[in-house]
Length: 119
Image (cartoon, rainbow, N blue to C red; front, side):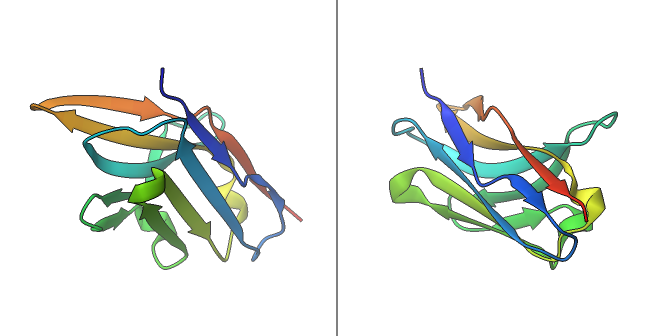
């Protein structure tokens, strides 16, 4: 069973930075896209950022210009650099790997890592 292992969360002051990482426990073939989602208490899970196998990126409106997603295909790892953090960025962040094989989609999810932005 493949697991996605996240790291890098924690407590940071407003205006600070954090870098999240998510690595697969073993190689996953045919990954179409990798991404990050987040869920704050009492809210639905929302898109933070995604990156395709070709390197195309997509960001949620609230993080554009502040967050940067990147990936290392050889290491099956995705990163999220978060700058200029705001209290409203506080949430549990989940990584996602989207696999597509013969037209069938399968999603892998990390266990989540807490990010708290507070003074």
